[in-house]
Length: 440
Image 1 (cartoon, rainbow, N blue to C red):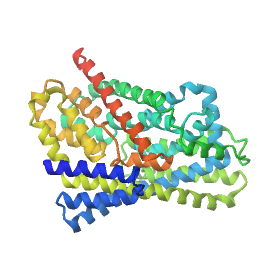
Image 2 (cartoon, one colour):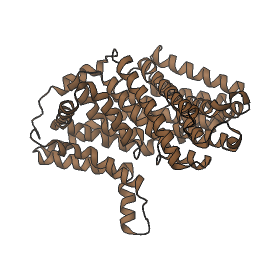
Image 3 (cartoon, rainbow, N blue to C red):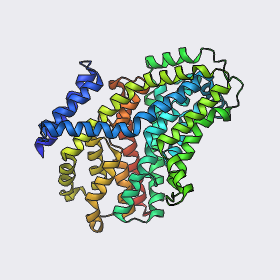
C-alpha cells in the first residue's frame, strides 16, 4: 500500500511539473502518466494499455458528441448575438454584483437533473457573454457556476451518486435532503465567495479574446426576443430534467420517447436543432455548415484532453489504490466522526471521480454505521462534503475548464483546486454545526 501511494503521489507531481514547467502538452502528459502509473502499480503492460483505452473510450462515449453539439449552440448564439442579448437582460435584471450568485444558483438547480460537465458546456456561451458585459474575468463567473453545479451533483438526489449513498446507508430520504441542502448552501456560498474575492485578479488572455469576439457586429437575428435565444439552452436542460424526475415506462411508446429525449446526447441535439432553425430563419442558412465545422474544430482539443484525463483516472481506479487507502483509514478508530469525510476526500483526491468517491466511501463505512457517533444522514452529508476535496489533474472537469476557457494549469491549481477544498471544509463546518445542535 505504501508503494502504491508513493507511486501515485510521484506520478501526480511529475504530471503537474511536466505540464506547468516543462511545457509538455496535457494530452501527451496525461497519456504517458497513465501508462507509467499502470505499469508501476503492477497492472502489466498489455493490461495497462487496455485500461487506458477503456478509460478513454468510456469518457468519449458520453462527452465527445455532447461537447460538439454544445459548441455548435454556442457558435450560433455568438453569431446571432443571442448570447449578448441574454447577458444584457441578466445584467439589467440582476446587476453586475449579483451575477456570480445568480450563476451559482443556476448551477445548483440545473445540475440536479443534468450532469456537471454537460450543464457547464450548455451554459458556456452565457457565462462568457456575461463576462464580457460585466467586465468580470471569465474565471470568476465560471467558478461561481461550477460551485453550484458541483454542490447539487454531489449532495442532492436524484443525482446518481447521492442516491447510491442513500441506498447504501439506508437513510431517511427526507432528513438526508434537509441535511445535505443546508450543507450544500454553506459549500456553495464558500465556493462563490472564493471565486469572487480570490480569483478576480486572474485576468486571462482568453478574456481579451472574448472581448474582441463579442464586439463584432452580429446582424442576424438582432431583433429576436430573448426567450427565443434561450430555447436552445432551456429545452435540453428541461428534457434531461424530465428524464431524471419522471420515471420512463419503456413498455409504452410515450415512456420510450421520454427515455430517448432525456439522454444528454439527444437532448442537446434537440437544442442544436432549435438553434439551427433559428439561424436559418434569421436569413443565412448557408453558413450553418461553416458554424458546425468551427464547433468541431474548437471541440477537438477539449475532447481529446478530457478523454486523456478520463483514461488517467480510470487507471487509478483499476489499480485499486483507493481501496487500500480507504481500508487503512477505516482501521484508525481515533478518526471517529471525521472518518466518512476523510475517506471521501482521499478517494476524490486519488481518483478524481465524485461518483467513485461517494459510492466507495459509503460502501466502506456502511458496515460501521451502527457504531458511528452520528446518524446515517450526517454520515451521508460528511461523505458528500468530503467528495469535494480536492479536484486536480485527474478530474475531467479540471481539463474541461482548461480547454473551454484556455485557463493555464498553474492558474487552475491556484483557483479551482483550492476552491474545492474550501467548499468541502465549509460543508463540513455546516455538518458539525447541525450535529452539535442535534438537528440530525
